[in-house]
Length: 288
Length: 247
Image (cartoon, rainbow over all chains, first blue to last red; front, side, top):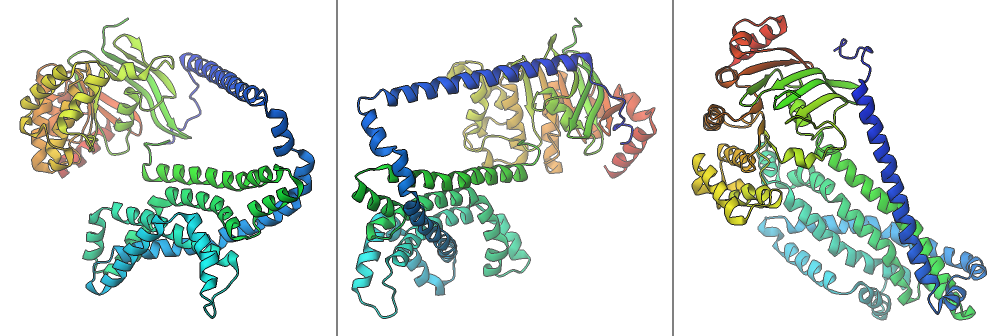
């Protein structure tokens, strides 16, 4: 080994030539990419700004003064979106994983729960999320149940959990079913119970495998927190609309949109990074 | 230019700071059967992957059919369409039948008509005793059958050079024979091959040249009679003593 690491090696002339070619190609690729980017963006900008209504749109949607003026109100609302998201996300994970695990049980005793899990997933995936939010925010308080909050923000959050829990349970189930049966068999031969195999062998592997689609659902959830505006929760969207109603200018909506983008883009990049890291780990040596 | 089919000069390959191949010189004439032997991690597979341009190299020159293929301007796909490779883990496409596995590249890369590609595939499958498997999906077949199918898939593109990467390493001992019989047949017909293998008896039998790799270098190479009966290097001797005792 020591002789291989010897510092005697110097790249040959041919290798230096090749490196020069590679560098030249890299430079050319960068040039082509830059030109393509500038041309495409240029066409887009010119196309939009030369539209007949552009002056009006710029005044009503992209007004800098209105943006500055509405920003405190919108960002205060946006804080609620973040809170809703942070509360809903762990609940969704628990509901989703729980429903998926229940659906993959085999014991006869668990049959009623399996049926309930199937019904839950079918019904809550079938109803549009906006409708669920509406029903939860308006319908549940009407029941006048003792102990049930009438705070529409938490009711709406519950609706999001119910809806996304159903989606996420299917993602988890796909992950569980993708684990090769030989894994369960080898857990069995070690004497683990079904439940232990699920917790210690199957679910950890399944979770790792479904991490990218799960994160994808969470990006979607971040945006769907804006649905709570239909039940008058003062989150970013509703705050923006509120401002709009008083000032006859739509700029706050664009402000809200920008805030959402600022939140989702980092998570999107994080999702890509997690997926790439997993690829590298599981296909070591094949994927760079 | 020489008329060698493949000529490797002073090849070097690193992963980060780790040098995995260095000072590799190798010349393969048409109809040669070159066997790469050596312990795991000695660089056999990496060398094959470098030859197929699956891995970039850090120095040296690889010439194939008289052309330098280590040039960054060379299209790797053009090279691979003339060079076949078979892997230890078969790597058949599980969603395609054996026949479709075998006709994919001839049709999509080489532009053969469906009927011609299928005729060629059927012909080869029959020769390799797989004619009744053509319609099956790979997962329904035994390991030996899958590896033979993978060989057929590589041969269907009529490569001038065949790279075989420990193709029997994942097989049950009783299935190894079937695959080796086919490789032997190919060797006898003059197919040019480079194979990484742990089957010493087989290498001794069919190789025209044996290369012993140790720690990323070809420590010793020569005709099998010489390497196996009278190795020059102490390390080759130790390696052979170990594997032959185990086998």
